Image 1 (cartoon, rainbow, N blue to C red):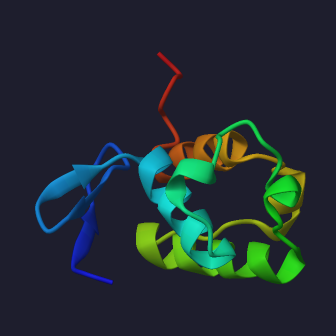
Image 2 (cartoon, rainbow, N blue to C red):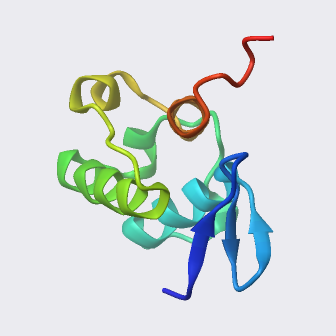
Length: 100
């Protein structure tokens, strides 16, 4: 994977180009499940995409490293879709988001 850093808004900059949390989560899920990103729909359950507990662990580890965060295993078990995972990551990276 190329050079990346997390911006204050949770977006990852890959070689200077910002990538949204949603785009990065979709890329991660697609890579781990060996699916094209076009097949990853945000509201489709991860289990329907073929993710098992080992895939979820790989996704967790990848995103923890990418965003320099810790993902609570209990919280991860409650996450059913890419959209829910994106919201969890956004709230973890920027806990004050949406509390205006």
